[in-house]
Length: 414
Ligand SMILES: Cc1ncc(COP(=O)(O)O)c(C=O)c1O
Figure 1 (cartoon, helix red, strand yellow):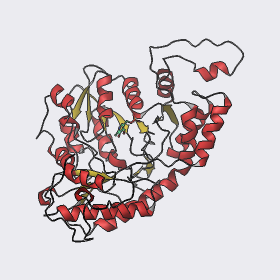
Figure 2 (figure 1 turned 90 degrees about the horizontal axis):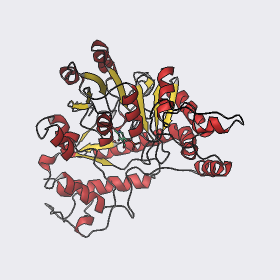
Figure 3 (figure 1 turned 90 degrees about the vertical axis):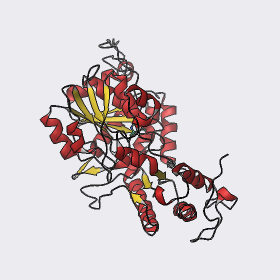
């Protein structure tokens, strides 16, 4: 295992030895970055579903879709097996394919851009804003060509993009907008929940997300025609799903309208989602409280930077999926990776979101990209780290993260 050389072995704030040098870790056991909070209600609902005899896509999924649409304030919600599936279907149903360009951000999980590749289109990376970590609208407009078909913004960490600016650009150039809201359930932009814009908006319910169904996703939209197509495409391209066929005695043939996909969400998973959705507001409040504890504690640490967070919560609310810190690398004696390693040795499950995607081997090679192409995303990507944030954590956990972070920071600060 790699060791990290300190500047000074002891710490000027707590005087404690770092775990990486053999000291006692700040937390007694690993504090995960996105631990799910599953209650008895979820467990009982899952068990009831198992006992019901219908564990595939059926009534629970329908109910979850309806409640999710109500929560977001949109006409339709189509449940799918992941946000990756949601993005793929959204691009597909929008008619985007070979020869088309889709403008997106390099500061995202690979699933966003993989989905563009899955429909055979070309991703065009545009640099991000250094404060919001989201697409810089001015740079978006500069990258539009006659082949551009869509803009795919990612609401990084749970903070909405400047959708007014992006929508104006999209209208002017007749482009489709598909939103990657994998991080952003519960977020608000300009007085409305993220997902209510009418653009196809894709959510993730993966295990570490603000609302989880273990694996799962949702597409929200207002267009009834597109909704029907999405429902057909998510289940083999058949016109009637299994639940509708089997709940009646009459024989119903399900005609194949198109060679579709297998992206349905099961009732088993929706059982989790129904209760997670009920708790979402309470979860968000806890996330906000913990983020405020971090803010307060780290204010005194010189040189750190943070993602912009709006303060008028009713109009603009960060969904706080990620609590991200940018390190002041120039004044540290170790690299970011060594810093994260030292945090992990303190039992702090720090993570990295993200290595800018154009620096990943596949995208670098395929699109002939590399260092210097998207300087802001690269700058963020080199110094970013994410601290644990989840309603499953206790206040003691948060205090331990703070203590461990301060130990590591103080020791490695030049
Ligand atoms: C920004 C972003 N988009 C898409 C995805 C894919 O989500 P899923 O795991 O539900 O497919 C993720 C997953 O973490 C993500 O972070």
